[in-house]
Structures are given as C-alpha cells and as structure tokens.
Image 1 (cartoon, one colour):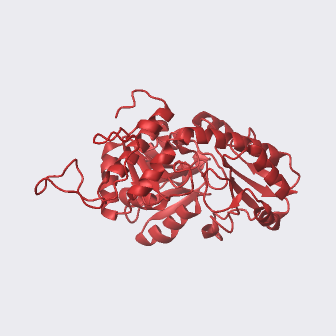
Image 2: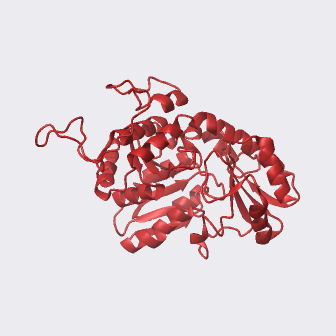
Image 3: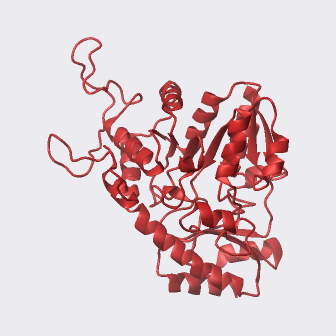
Amino acid sequence: MSDGGQGFSTRAIHAGQEPDPLTGAVAVPIYQTSTYKQDGVGGLRSGYEYSRSANPTRTALEQALAALEGGVRGLAFASGLAAEDTLLRTVCRPGDHVLLPDDAYGGTFRLVARVLANWGLEYTAVPLGDLDAVRAALRANTRVIWCETPTNPLLGIADIAGLAAIASAAGAKLVVDNTFASPYLQQPLSLGADVVVHSTTKYLGGHSDVVGGALVTGDLTLGEELAFHQNAMGAVAGPFDAWLVLRGIKTLGVRMDRHCANARAVVDLLLGHPAVGRVLYPGLPTHPGHAIAAAQMRDFGGMISFTLRGGEEAALKVCELVQLFTLGESLGGVESLIEHPGRMTHASVAGSALEVPPDLVRLSVGIEDVDDLIADLSSALA
C-alpha cells in the first residue's frame, strides 16, 4: 500500500497490514503453514508455494519494515546475525574487504573475524566518526563500509551522509546497523545508506519475546539479490516470530518516546554521581558526536553506557546490586536491563583492538516509571 505521505505511527500500524480480505480480521493472521496448494503445475496461488520462500505473515512484516525505513524491499530473518551473514555473502566475495567500526557489536565482529574471514573476507576496524580515517582505510577491494550509529556499547556516532558519500565514491555499499536508534529515531536510507540492518529482537519487537533480524534497501535490484540469497540460505523468520515483531512495531513510536525520556532522567542522575566516571550518551552536548546525532536523529535513544570510578569490581557490583534493572544481554525491551559488556555481550572481542573498558556498564532503559528506575540505580551506586 502507498503511505500517501502518512506519519510514522500510522505506517507502523497499517503498512502491509490491511484487514484480511476473507474474514475482515484487523490483525494479520499467523499463517502457520509450510506448504500451499497450487492451482496446477507451476500455478502459484497468490505467489506462495513454500514458507521458506514466502509466507503471508512474513510478507506483511517485510512490507511494514520497508515502509518504516523508507525502502523498497524489506526482508525478515531468523536473527540479526542471520541477516548480516546473508547480506555480506550477497554483496561480497572471497578476497573482498570490509570496513568495520572500531567498537562494533561483538556478534558482528565475531561473524566477520571468525566465520567470514575463513571464507576469505578481509576486514579493517576503523573509527567511523573520523571520515579521514575511513578514507585512509579504503582499499581497491573494499566492498562494504559497515556502520553502527549509535555504536554498541560505546555509543559512538557516525555521520551517515558523510560515509555514504565516501562509499559511493569508492564503489562500495554503506550498510547501517540501525538497531539502537530504530527507524523511529533515524532513517539511514534517506541519508544515502544502501542497506539498513536490524536485530528485530530489540526495539522493533520491543517485548523480549522474539529473536529476529531484518534488511531494508532502497535499491530494487539489490533487494531482489538479497531475496534470492534469503531463500537460498534459508534463515528466514518463522510466521509466529514475524507476527510478534509486527505486533511490536505498532507501538514503536510511543515506546521510543518513553525510552528516550527515561534515559534523559537516568543520564541526569549519573552525571551528578560521585561513583560514576564517564557517561556515554549522544544526547549530551559534551559528546563528540552530539551535533551529528542531533542532525540525523529525532531523539537520542534509550541506551546509556557509563564507567565506574572503582574500576571493574565496582562495575560488577552495580550489576549485582540493582533490583529493578534486570541483568541481561539484550536490549530494547519494555523492561530495563543492565549488563557488563566486557564479560557479557562483548566478551568475543576481548584481546582484540575492539576490547571494551572493564569498568564499563551498559543500560537499556525501559519504560517503567522513571522514579523507580532512579531509586533502584541510586541504591546500587551508593
């Protein structure tokens, strides 16, 4: 369906989600089927034959994802890493080179450095906030500039439009992992990115009850190539998982507003606390990427990282003492989470150039009553 210039939350509720033509159901049905009756040999009914290739519930999600990111093709996967693997094996060949952020998500680094490197993919980690460093790191065989903004877990900011210009001039693709921001806060395709990646497990799903991934592109030809590899490699989202993400998307806008508001209040607490060293949050005017974040984001998100003056022992103690913040490795759900990246989400980069500080704590600020969150964190920090 055409968005007709509709607003974000209208598209989140309606794009790809017309009432069922048979029953009038306003919620997209869960098409829990593997096989579809064909109208004669080679005659597909509504384009469906086998649910690895396509499933109506997944189609609705993929159309919604494309509408929210302003793309022409969305693809839903079994996980964010499945989406990343499919993308890199589609646009790269053995011997090609990828630029990664020097503080990339640990799972992305592990996929590239320990899986795809064995396939022949070369990579360089570079500070993406420094466009001159990015230009200097390019090679003749560079095919992808892989961008996270904000980054995980150091909340670094990259200039998407600036990177897009560099990638275009080099004949490379700019891929932006938009998981932390969500399409509500940031739309990389409008800034020149070629592909957007999501872990739909996080803000898009929003309720910590589903694992999924997504790719969205504004290039129809690339979209068809990705769809071919999605089917050929087979790591697709199942119908129930697709339905859960679709349900989560409907409230994305209102949830993100609350995540952002609560995060600002938590930042205020951390800034004035004697136990806290640095606070990493792009909404702070002192953040080196603040001006760029303000220009390319609607708001600054619900993710915060901070260091403890007492070092790693103090960081681990805070993770242990909180009661309302749940110790867990994911993010983007309605409940608030806390983690120690060095020993949890980013253990895979230990000993590498991407190793994170041992005194770092990462918060995914949820949508609880903010006074309760402040009280819980204050008690743990005391």
